[in-house]
Length: 246
Length: 357
Image (cartoon, rainbow over all chains, first blue to last red; front, side, top):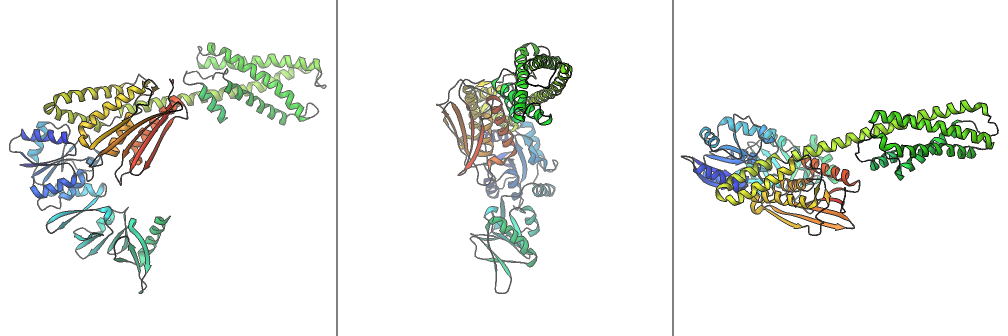
């Protein structure tokens, strides 16, 4: 069994590594100190199991777990935490295992025995916990077969186009397989709907203009495209712009 | 009234007796003001005694101040005795004392007035009525005042009880995360570096000894700084290179008394909200200054772009607690300020640098 150890604290990683080395048919295939690094390593080394701390700088364990779902063969995840975290309450404990630090050798062996590949039940539980919990800080997209993480705070707008949603940043555009509705729910505080098919980042709103055809369009900082604002959303958009200016 | 409340709160700090110290200049001043206000009321509601209202005010003020200040003086002298009796008996006896003074002084004043013929209309047959009226007014006013002092005393007691409860709560509230993370670190070190593990256990013991100690209500600044260092030693083991600390506290006098655990919670906040959320870590600056007899200790830490360190609730509770404990120990001018600027979060605590309480 190939295990990836993820923790931002070096002594904690060292201890897990030593415990794992003492167990049969287990090998540590890598160590990561952040959620992002864990994702990158998972893609590269295809571990069977991740032992992952919940509280980490940058991308935390819960968010990393959600992004891992996008892998073709997602590993099983066992969370480690120093104390009963509020974040853990979001889970159905039967679906996702967790270990309390300092981790006991027997408890670790037991958890590893029980762990299989991320099951459908686990995936659903993670998804659900994410939806009830806090919004992600990054959007995960597959670009030519590899995972790419886009910081949500860079995103200018989401635009739906049949099966896919376009994520637009000043650096370019990528496609993701999520629905505009779920994105709207998750990022309600940062994004506003301007049209049936588009959400725009409130913080980058910089103008509202009427084009020759009488349609309103919003301008966003550092992107050229102007998005159409539908009649039923115009009042909302105006209000948000006013709030920004005040 | 607020002034009076503030004054007497400042005078009597936690000796557990409801009667404030009437020997204190500020309280004597308050008594004078109260008596004068009563004189105003009396002049406004009674028919004119002398030629004009100002003369009335003069005579009545003289009479009331006489009673009020004599009462205050007597209560001041009797306070040590009264305080041994318990609150109920003390209330009763102070009440009777004031009434007795009123009766004696009213009699004296009455006969002085009859002799001196300041009030032409007065004659000796009105003695009884005059005495009863004076006693009536005194009975009501004294009752109201004592009631006020008693309620204020209870309020103050409650405030102190709450403050103590908060200290206890805070002391118990060294984050459980910290305890278990430290244990985990020590578990890792026992094999790889037993000496450091032992050191960490000593540091952790000292910290929890301070945190669990509910008896000792004072610590020295030096002990607080040592405790802060021990705390940071443990965190440094866990966070490795991510945590850098810069100390600049040479200017601080070591043996000033301070409430215990005023510094460590600030550092814990700085780590929890400042360093931990940063993958690359950062530096915590601890800077102490002594200017014009006042100590200012500033703890500053970098904050991650989006998470603002000051807005967290746990953070605020700890800060509010420290602010209240400093003000309880040193008065209103002591306190805690926070500031966020250029990606740095700063907390400054201020208190007098003399050998205080």
